[in-house]
Image (cartoon, helix red, strand yellow):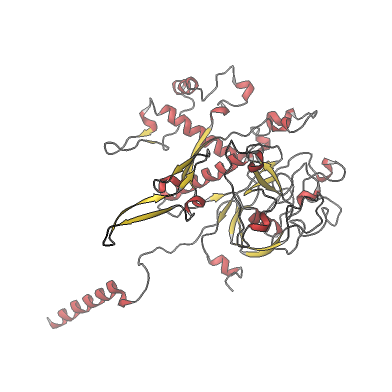
Length: 459
């Protein structure tokens, strides 16, 4: 009996020690150990410092950049530019969501009813769309999402690309972080908190100034037509025969691995938000609640990645020339006096046709220029921070064109060699699409894993 009492007392003592944690600061128990899995199609860019800015004379004498030492956090970056087929996944997702929304009005299988009264109805993504069902296709045609047979020839698609509008949300952390936007507590005569109210205003995406009523005020909402402008191949050039590319570039399978073009900055940003939503929906289904945000790279991140860890490298491949030791051009651009074909391509080429830089990134120079997240300002290098420099501006439709400039980097198939240099910066307007501008995504790094220490980062 005494032995049994001793065992019970020992168990109780151990249990009490475990609950009280010996009075020591040991953190919250039960937290799962987490390692970041390498995202598909992305490469790890380690943290570091570099001299941001030009490494050669300013050919245009624009004086838009000066040399500046900056430091960058580690991040993930797409190995190549987003391709036509990858962007098509976004287009089809929007098409399917609109189709489900239309079909759910009359067909119960496409919606999930709320479990309680007053709850929200959701689309049922587990139910496959019956594209071959004549009745359902007629519903989609009557609603205007799908074209009738006599209209399809002109569009090269069965659906009306003009109807593909993506409705999305994001949190404007820049406005939320302003100290003028704060919550003021109210206290009675005894100093007891009795409530409070928000102070400050928020600027919406359409430029309206509204008072802050809560955290929801910082949730921005926007609708964007997301189908690429396939007419850019003709619109960008006068007296030039580009009709074949206009008709085939985005939809034909021969161009699946070519970089998507005809996508403006707003559409590229919307793609990043969709990619974030697409990934996080999967993580939630598998019981993982860690948010992964995809976005356009900042100008500094892009240049840092393009240099590939090589100090003062003029081009992503490190050397001061656009030819290799065999005399061959090593990027897709406009060499010599306009001999487009001397580098192996007359317009865009499939991604990853030339050797990657030291980080393993392809086409950081040439093929297509790439959108960054930053607004273009000639003096940005003078007032941005030297730790992860960033300058953004939410330009509305009513803003002047000068405020709609966004930084593009890397040069394209139609640019001379100067624009391929790592330190060269230029711009395009956020609401214009071009046949020579594409984009790639980045994702901030969430923490260290074993591979970091093996590569020497932990030393």
